[in-house]
Image (cartoon, rainbow, N blue to C red; front, side, top):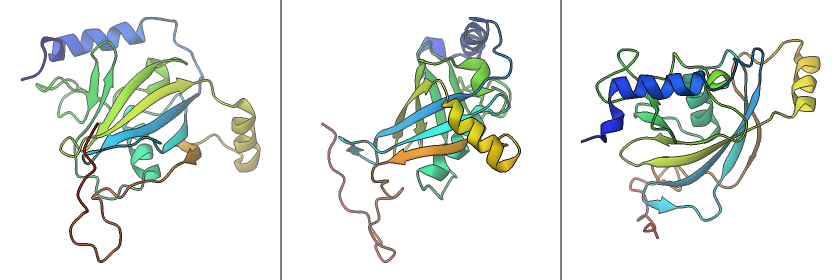
Length: 188
C-alpha cells in the first residue's frame, strides 16, 4: 500500500510546486552528482559515484539511462523511480500519471524541475533496490565550453563528466563463470 501522498493527483501537485517555484531558467545546465549507497542487500561505505552533465532538453528518462550506462548495468528490464523530498515520484508510467503514483519520467525535464542544491533519490530494480542519492550542482562552465569547442555542438544526451569507486555487478557476479552471486553483506 502506498502512502496517501502517492496518488496521481498528489504527484501532479508535487510536480507543479517544483515547476512553479522559480521562473523557468531558460537555457540552463546542471551537474548531477549520483552516489550508489546501497543495493542487492549491501550498503556501500565508500559509495561509487558519477557526475553527469544534463541540459535543458534532457528528461528524467534520459538521466535514468545515463545512470544505468555509467554504473555498468546491462539488464534494464527492471522498474526504476526518482523520489523527491516533496513526495513527487517519477518513473515509467503508461499514462502521464499512473495508479502507482508515478508521473512519467519521459515528460519531465531535469533542469526545469531541479535547481543547484536539490537532493532526491533514484532507485533501480525495485527488487534488489539499487539506491542512489542525487545532488544537483552548478555545472563546470569550463568543461561545458571545452565540450562545445571540441565537438562543435552541445551534448545531445546527458554526459558523464567524472567518476570514482568500484562499481558492483548488477547481479553480484565476480567472473563470467559465476552462476550464483556471493552472499550479500547485511545492511547495517
